[in-house]
Image 1 (cartoon, rainbow, N blue to C red):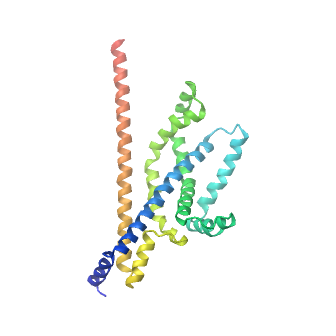
Image 2 (image 1 turned 60 degrees about the vertical axis):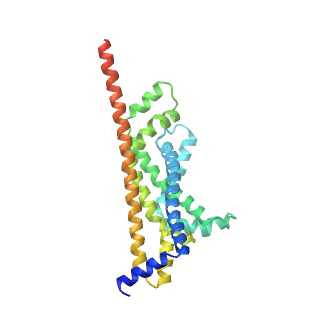
Length: 251
């Protein structure tokens, strides 16, 4: 088939209501897995990072630190597809959960995998915050946890927004591996269309374009968040300067 015929066959297929619904389902699953995976990853990563940077005076903190070190090593040291296969086909059946929705398994595995990477990202972000911030919080009577959550973590997040954006992009691109546990994602749908039409060229080109569009949208979202943080910082700086000028005038 020539190019015009290939394109015509592909778009005629996509006019079918069944393939439209399947495509939207696959696209939605791709986005949902990445978004939920990132949210879970941020929650898990923040908890691990707090333990990692916390003083190890108490035995429980030393134990948690060792557990999380092993956790991070496992999830950073094995491919995502291996984690999915082991969880869905080995660990869950052994534990007696053989009827778990594979989409839910995808959420969990992507979240745990992302948590291992976000923990290191967040740890670097926390370390980048001036140590005086923690000391100031403790000086006004705040506990370690409260100071970390209300003062240090918000500042650390500002510093790591671009890196979190890269993690989100990575998750979007890696969602194609959920096809190994029978989840319909963008890749699975496009592969099905390619098989139906006996032509892989146009479906796979379109699939690549969709991934590129998703990545561009994430990039724009990250830039928007960075601008919001920058605007907030400018307002805070301006308010502080006004207060200083007012104090000088009163003197």
